[in-house]
Length: 235
Length: 110
Image (tube, rainbow over all chains, first blue to last red):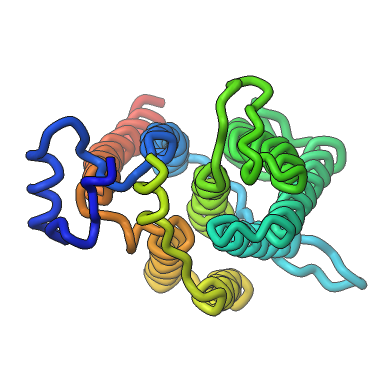
C-alpha cells in the first residue's frame, strides 16, 4: 500500500472525489480499525441522539412542570447551595481525561512507551473518578431524594426515566472505556506495541495506532457528555 | 503496510493539545456560568447551544484529529448528522402537536 503517498494525492474536495472514485479503498491512509471505530461511533451518535431527541419530545409535550435540573442537582456546600456543582466538577474531570488521552495518543505515535503508558493510566483514573462521582450522584438521587423511573418529588414523572437511561448509558460507555484504558496501559507498559506481542483475544499483532482508536472512543465519550451537559443539565 | 504506516504518522506539538484543553475548560466554565448567573429564555438557550457546539467542534477537530483527515472520511462522518437535524425538526413539530392536543382535551374534554 505504499502507493498511497498522501501528500501526492489531491486534497480537500478534489481529494473526496478522487478517493471515492478510486479502486479498492475509499479511506486512504486510514487504518481499517480506525475506519471501523469511526463507523461505530457514528452509530453510537444516532443512539444518543435518539435518547436526547426523545427527552426533548417528552419535555416539550408534557403539561406538567419539568424538574429544574439546576436545583435538583445542586449541592449545599458550607451552608450555601451551589447549582450543578457536582456536574460541573464531573465535566472538568472528563475534559481533563480527554486532554491526557490526546497527549497519550501523541506519545504513542512518537513511540514514547513510558509517557504513553502514564498518560493512559491518568486517563483511566480520570474516568474512574467520573464514574465514582456519578455513582454518588445516582445514590443521592435514589436514596436521598427518592427519584424513581416512574416518579419523583420534583415534577414531571418522565424525568427519572430519562435521567437513569441517558446518564446510565453514558456511564456504561465510560466504564467500558475505563476497563479498556487499564488494559491498554498495561499493554503499553509491557511493550506489546514495540515487540509485536500478539493480543490475548485477537491473536494479532498491534501497533500504537490502537491507542489512537481507543482515543477516538474516549473523546467520543467526552463529546457525548458535552451534549448531555447542555441538553439534560443546563437546558 | 509498514511503509504506509510510517507515512501516516503525524504528531503535533504538545502545545496544541494543551491549548485545546484550556479552551475546553474555559468554555465549560462559561456554560456553567450560564446556569450559575441564571440566564433564562432565548439568551440561555442560545448560549448553551453556542458553547456546546464550540466544545464539540474543538474535540472533534483537534482531539479526534478530524481536521487532519482526508475529506473522504470527514464527509462520511459529518453528512449523516443532517439526518439528526431533520429528526429534531420532525419531533419538535410532533411534540408541539402533542402538547396542543393535551391542553385541548385536558381543558375542553373535562
